[in-house]
Length: 254
Image (cartoon, rainbow, N blue to C red; front, side, top):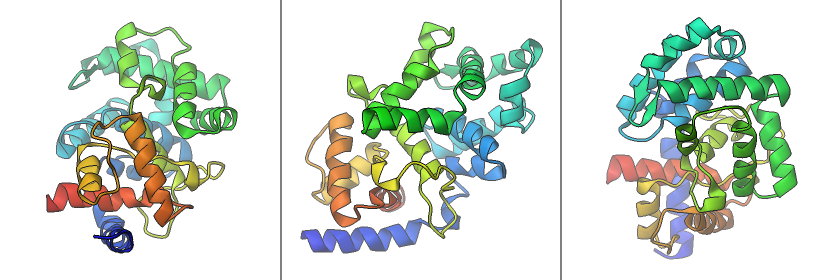
């Protein structure tokens, strides 16, 4: 396909997959259970963090985590007692365990109590760095400014070390992107969609390479920057909307 044909293909597939039916089997279904901004932020961040592996398992474990938090994630972050926190000690999703979950709750509490919340931390970091990948590294520094087990640091990616930061970029897509289709929330109004970076996983990378819009063979930060730059040629204002097309084709059409 030539460039024009690729653009038309991406637009067509984005419309096909960016619709409410997408929600049901995707991790974004968890924050869709909630109506308040803070509940969606907290649940979205936690579920995005464990979003690797099979989607049914991610959704199942995401629900288990929400139930351990009495289906009130923001309230739990802000007011959970030490006894309440111990409930999380039984949680496990692959290498993310209860110890990590408790550390995450403490870190989130610090962010909401001392840094005006998740959105504000990302806004401030983006303004300072003027680049979303570097802003993620800045967020990570704030997130781990509280006492935590060293092992927990592996669960928040660091683009300054070359990571694609797929899960955080996915979370940011959920919070920032806004359209009338009802999948992404668009509740963070202060961050422009143009600044978002593509959540790059195996499916997205493979489809992008087959379309000739990604040359780099590694799924790392440089690949994210290369692919996002290319997608901005098709839509400079909302390039990450094409995540629906690339991921949808990769998962559903093989």
